[in-house]
Image (cartoon, rainbow, N blue to C red; front, side, top):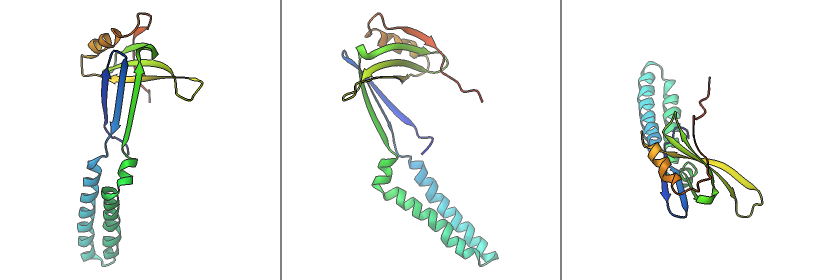
Length: 162
């Protein structure tokens, strides 16, 4: 599914920063399919008054959309497949850089960790989404927990040029 809203939650403690993100199943998709089935059924019935061969289309088209709606609405496994949940926890010593993104409402931090069971270092970044004009305060708040040798920069987010 595309165009799903990501919900984010952050928790700051003395030991580190936790980040949770999840995507809920889009209920608008079910409403759209239900209405699409109804509208196409009415359309094909009117078309059948012009030519009876449209009766077959009136059964197949809206019927298929209706079956798709039913399989999405009542299938627990389908809903779980399109719902994602991630939980990350970082200790303050794992954060290697803090950045204020100037062209977006984001504070970004880079981390470097060793995963359990792995022998190699994993590097990555996490965006902390802020409300408008809060990113400086959020960055200073996070910075107060970091060691003084962690770089604090201002940067632009990569904007693709088409």
